[in-house]
Image: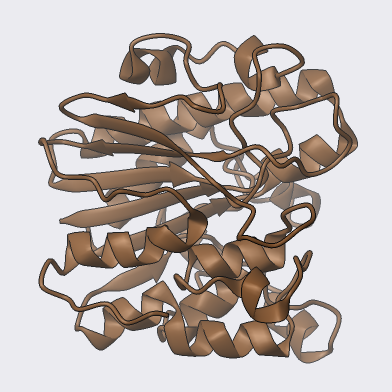
Length: 305
């Protein structure tokens, strides 16, 4: 099995009104779900190949869900907000970094001999900026590094062996104008071909959260439609392969334009497999990593708590 996690930062299941996910045209996702159904706090769908359930992002801690604690929880199975006693935004602090070093999904799988990779491409200056203290590793990057994953470079991107965080390279071209612009569909194909070489692949897209914070309605619709095209391209490569993929988030944001910033909405766990499988009983963010590991290594005994 090749398991692929497609992570959309700040992408929740909101109400029908004031929701760019509903306003967007998403023919590919609609076909998967049997309708325009990627909204609704209690939305649940289960067919032979498709699985959709809402996940609680509160982590049993009062306040608005945030990225550092939500992502650490998602990629370790440890309730990071409960460990700290509060929700933490942006980048993990030292306590969360230590949790990631010990419990990262990349590390847990790599320790069992599984091939793991982080599909995102990093700029040429990334390592120097981190070394100079001008940039900090995100939870996703820390998780990958904890599993011994090599960070992908511009050379990988140019060979179709990586995907930039914006999918199309349009933001990357502001720094490196010689990098070719590609369509979301082609970016999805690149992810699909890459993932077939690994047991577990993560791709992170955070423009959803950026756009949600900026409250740009038209841009938000365009981003959701871009995601739909990306998934279609990805599926054009993997649909006949032994692939399971999961689209997921850490907290809501873009789905509710009546709220400026993160929401308390649940997030989707939208999964697909090319054959009928038994999906885990996911209800909360901390359920995800243990569930994925049991899918990839069915006899693995999890002790994450």
